[in-house]
Image (cartoon, rainbow, N blue to C red; front, top):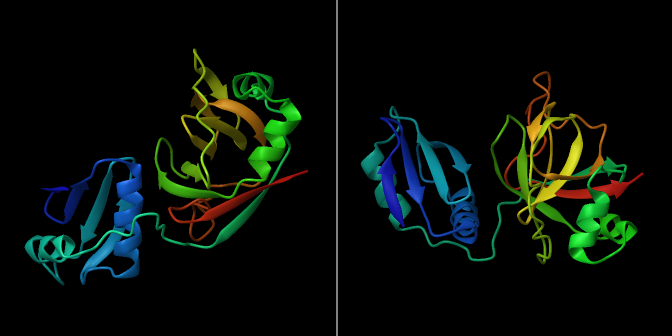
Amino acid sequence: MRVLPGGSAALLVEVADLDAVLALHAALEADRPPGVVDLVPAARTVLLVVDPGVTSLDAVEAALRRVTPRPGGRADAGLVELPVVYDGADLADVAAHLRVAPEEVAARHAGTEWTVAFSGFAPGFGYLTPAGGGWDVPRRPSPRTRVPAGAVAVAGGFTGVYPRESPGGWQLVGRTDIAVFDLARDPAALLRPGVRVRFVPC
């Protein structure tokens, strides 16, 4: 574990891999050090945002070094069910890669409970990891210039839902009408770290 200053009010913790991020994030969510106002996990880091009026970076680092990560643990931020129509443009390609029928891809995707590991790429875009693995699908050889909002996609062991129209290189397997990011909602992001997600075929 490597701890770096993230400006005057944050610490960036570098760890070995995503499993280590999830273990550390779960432990910090369960017992947040005093003065830490936000935790931001990523693929190999956790950012701790601190209120300087409450504590110091040195005090937070000392508390952080006493934390025991929880291997296999995940912060639990509740369950979201998303209706999905499995008619994505890349469904047949994903099926060929996994050596199953397209209908089996849809059934497996919907039959898996996913958890948001971290957010990135665009506001509201959650990187969801599956219980049990088995989704190591490559990105498209050439990204699309336009992926519609609500597109459900897989790539690199993750699934995600595009929060707005944007370029993207993930494999499209379906679509949902649910807005996963809405500034009029509190919180705006539906798919936040620790949220468990079930996709419901419709």
